[in-house]
Length: 450
Image (cartoon, rainbow, N blue to C red; front, side, top):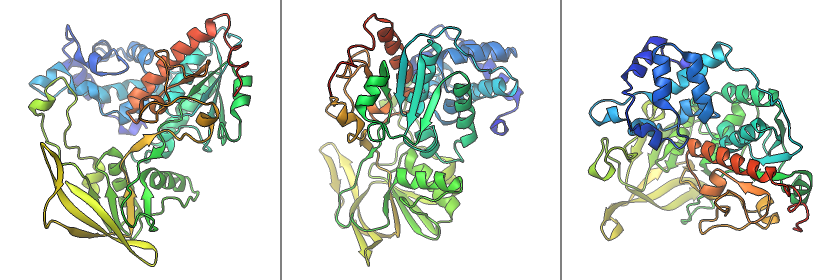
């Protein structure tokens, strides 16, 4: 992991560019409220240890956000009004990797333990952050993960070229050493009934993510060779460990069309390149975003800009304002996609007359987002309430309709960024700690019939 870092002098130079603003908008933009000017000041003078202490106060997974966060903070950097912003994300990564490399990070085992047992369902960024905070508060924590290894979307949904799995393993081993128990290969609500969880634990936090993919219901959708992006990415990650999984298929030697122009689609481009695809095209319904800020996204707001990732630089091409009309196949397998150009006006989207065209494709990857968490199983068994979008409904304290059962991350707020998931996990843990500190904690949900 350290090999991706810049030279220390470059990081310190960037830290010196930080203006220590009287009103630091980077604080405002970061969901975690990272103390950016403060730790920039410390690393500019070589005080890496103190910088790490400040960073660890607000962020449980800086080695993850330092690699994957879209850096909301940088787009609100005051210096960025008339110059390039400070490279905040890379500075953050430099701090945490320096701390790991120089032995500054050691297991911090709580000196005192409460008698409360908690369970966190899901081991993605929200789950890991929630578990970490609960453990620091002295509660016993068990994390349940339905896949064979902990990490959730970090492990199975993000390619190795963006996040080496050794980075995840390093953090999980640290959490284990600090007293958190991880139970993998257990699908809570199926292998372990909801009643058992409520009986055995004083409080639960559901952090299973938003895993129900949005589908594309057009003629020919039933053809083979049309897969969801998460299945394709999970297959690739499983294969990278030497195992096989045949849900999403391989792009090797195939003409690949990726429907969806977001980050997940870009990840699929990078994987398809590495697997040896014959041709790669990524299509998006919306118009191509601007390269620079517009009045609609004035500073310090996070702008909708054209993103060109390393995956795009490696291969493939992109097409914008393309609507998928039909999948055409032969012998039950997709062979072509019928498309049409669209344009957007004040009255909405309309198809451009006589603009139809066809794309060759024997592997189609649907990267059009997620609609809500999977309801079947644990969420249904717990008789939880859902909001209008199908996400788990909670009160302002992150508690669901079932007393003692909390929810956080994409499962509660909908598909979002890793940094928001960490923030949700931290906040949920704080409310759980308050709940567990009350005299009646653990009794009301155990007596509740489901």
